[in-house]
Image 1 (tube, rainbow, N blue to C red):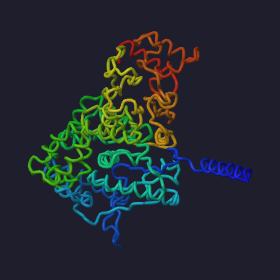
Image 2: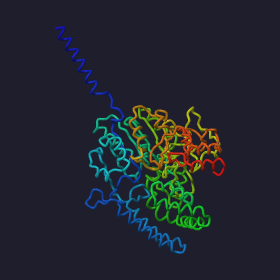
Image 3: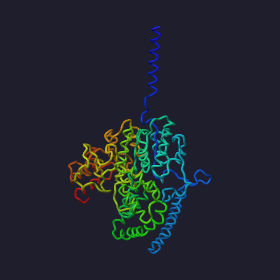
Length: 558
């Protein structure tokens, strides 16, 4: 009998041990479902939604018509001998015609109540490849390819609407995914406008249902594009336009030709004054009609737009937009609520509280691109959102500038014992809300692509089992990473120094140009540090052209 009991005990122990092996206490981060919350315009909207007359707003044919009609109206108006009222009479009706389907009333409600969208409750793997391409944003498809389509979900939302309303709907979606998958938590990656929705979600629901939360190229602190719009700070500048076209020319021969033409105009004072000056005059003279005929009656009541206004422009923006028409109290209450959430102190507290509930949080931002050229400002950006807003407060040099003149050393703003200054002295991340959890990628424009590896860092962050920091994997994911636009790949950069200072003497000198020339001619092999500091055009090598640029720096020409 004793022997039988002993055998039974051993057998039971083995069964319990076996169950422990096949039933882990908690799933790893990589096994959890990920919910993607993308940006503005990525959820298709339909008029007469759910009826036989349902029609996609802004399909390809509509966009082509908009461009054609807009060009015709612009040309016709431009020939009105500087009669800007006649110009506006031609242009504004065309603009209004295409804005009308998505327009909002001044009380914060949509003008067309029939507009709706589809929400997809299943993971991407439940759909064919063709269905995925037609139903889901490209960003979600890219995440799915790396993370796994069977575990990737897309949260759709009306991007015109109040981020707070969308946050409550996001909560319902998260709870549904949890119930369907059996997961206690989900991973969330949000991009652009989507970060405003997630920030509002964290304010109301905390972080108890989220494992890893990543803000990618986020507009959670706004963008100066909208700030300049609502404050009427719109300008056309030859050099910002040139910069924008030049960076666009990285991928297109056509834009390269346009960039060359604009560069020629920008460097010719007479042409700049004639053409850019005339365009500026037209813009300034058309602005009153643009606001009174189009922006105020159709767009100014759109809560999603106001969510993109930076805090520093918000009060002036409201006063400017509603200088002639009183703001509706219902609308003001709606947009004030999000801007209280967006406030820097509140936003940081909201995220910290969510982290206290076990949520891990990370930010990825781009820099070194000219923002959309509707002003004469040279802010560091990813071409759509300012780096200082994406990153939660990074200190940035102006675009195409460094913190100091060549040869001078910049001192980090907040000395916390870690280096948070980029190797090219353009960004100081020490002033970010979360400096240890913020990554910055040079040359990353507003988007990610699976081919060039820029999405890899997002997958790494989403699958982390512990809070990742900029010190977790310095070899592959240091705080500053270079996206090489020539080779189309990411290059981790952990070096701190002055661009052009190849020998790291603390100043750019003729000796640096000599070393660069020796490297270019194959006489010596560069170290990783020398390559980072001497590859001026960032094509992955130190060439004779790089050596010449370094000599110019040393001579004070740059």
